[in-house]
Amino acid sequence: VRDRVVLPLGLEKTLTAQILHTYETRLFPSAESIEIKRAFIEKFATILLYEFPNQQVEIHVFGSSVNGLGTSRSDVDICLTTEYKELENVFVLNKVLRKYNMRTYCVPHARVPIIKSWDPELRIASDINVNNTIALHNTRMIQTFVALDARVRPFVMAIKHWTKCREINDAAFGGTLSPYAWVNLAINFLQMRNPPILPVLHPSSQPDDADNGSSYGADQIDLRFNDDIEQLRGFGLANTESLGFLLYAFFRTYAYEFDFRHQVVSLRRGCYLTKAQKGWDSGRPSRIFCIEEPFSTWLNLGHSANTTAVEGIRQEFQRAFHILRDGGSFDEVCEVYQRP
Ligand code: 3AT
Ligand code: MG
Image (cartoon, rainbow, N blue to C red):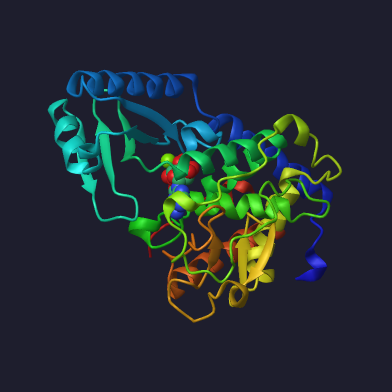
């Protein structure tokens, strides 16, 4: 494997062009889709105002529709903030939305309870939570990374696209990894290039690594990170690797180099930690593929994938790597998965 580190220059250039082509023609969100999202937020705000005229309820949009990594088909992730505690019961809002013909269902027992809604008029899906503001911070963190180097957006979107086509991007129903987990993996990879393309944004003082979360409540999370884009701009310029090479190296890394048994991906630190360091070496089935959540560091974003799922994901990395190594195209890599 090691002697295949270099992708022939011709292939690298072709691959870069293919990624950019897919990015520009299929991944970059259309003006129309952005307008639909805006119209949906406006409609939602009107409904809230009408239904809860005496309560202050604020709408915050997070996730891929604002972090720069969404496509035309991405859903809208919404966080409502309010002092009106009754709204924290997802069934309350669920009932309201149904009055307006939204198709909805509740996921009340998730770590973050949400309402999943589909608006048949505007044809748009959304996930709505109430008063869970942590994702607003990690959204701003991802926005910051995306702004720092022109390669980040097409690189991460290409990976998200591949995971969707290969059906390995569904934590809740597919038992694989969430889009957010994949984004963490992709950004950490860019931090670990030599020279690095992306910096570490978080302060080096750490919550106790081996902590299992018991002493950290949601209100005690350290939310600090460097979001000074102007100061950080140009950080990755010493690295001149192309998109094609980066994608090839990404697949190779996770196909053959990353030590799933012992290593933990940490975007917070911009490196790999060990499972032992984090106290994650007990062999639990939720700790096969370890990706540390950058703010809530006791959470493993890979918890949804069990041994079989991780084996399937590794096979996908190997498949993608082999296709590119043998001169195949990005379209072949992203061929829609055919169930056996
Ligand atoms: P799509 O474009 O919708 O596929 P996305 O980037 O919106 O991808 P997700 O739908 O997985 O990603 O999640 C939406 C946001 O929710 C992303 C992140 O800000 C937050 N989030 C998701 N999972 C977690 C988690 N385990 N811990 C903290 N925040 C999370
Ligand atoms: Mg989303």
